[in-house]
Image (cartoon, rainbow, N blue to C red):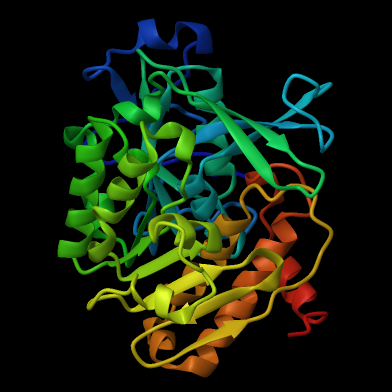
Length: 384
């Protein structure tokens, strides 16, 4: 995708260098503030002032509708399904990380999004920064850490496309984001602030996460929360449950899977509406429960129901839930009133279900996220 030939200066008085240093001398040739510096300092990570590209396609916006906070990493996905990590003959490198997947998913659908987080001052980190930019995601809130690597995750794919994860982050750069490094101006411009729970696991990122969410809420943003349970990253199941629920009541919209319902309710039936209603809180506007190929259920104070899914051949389910969230938030950012109109909400959820379904037909998360046209085309074949 074409990028503007002459980007404007970045915010906060930081100017893009006239010519980029060698990638291998970058950390020595540029002074750092603490252990991190902002993504826009790199000339290929174009300053995010432009609203359109030279070819007329949508560009990043300095006032994105949806700001996504959290982890950005590399998934290594086996080239064949149904084998263990040790048995896999090769792996496909794929950018991922749930909040980043959502940000890219929204942009692919024609929406306006930004990502806030931290990656390593390494080849993978710069690759990920470029991928955000190439996908029209505002990356001015992305920082590089000189003392930690970009997170990696190896993903085992069962024969049905479902996954198991092995993470390399001890610590990874995303865990080291500090509150003082937050781009509060960017956060306060958001209509929707979306986050997960992984950045709640360790300090200093936990404090930064809570501060970012509070700043967004205080500025009037709708808070979207997808816990995205990854149990191996937590010290115990009890800590995971407590951590996920610690910010539960700050969310306006929550998306969880049926497995996460069981986990959060200590094994209760995720298909029992009375169990789901235990997870509602007084200020929650919408609770969504995804059921994979079966679609999703929705619960609000006014109504509840189910929207069927699109049946496809699953290759890799990585990113399917994030694509669903992206599909929903891309429409909600345009008009919050669909939360009060069940008919329009159902149409939005049908769209989101198709986003998730199309994503499982390819390997990797970000590479598989659909465009709006692909979703529109698939909707013509949708039967509920």
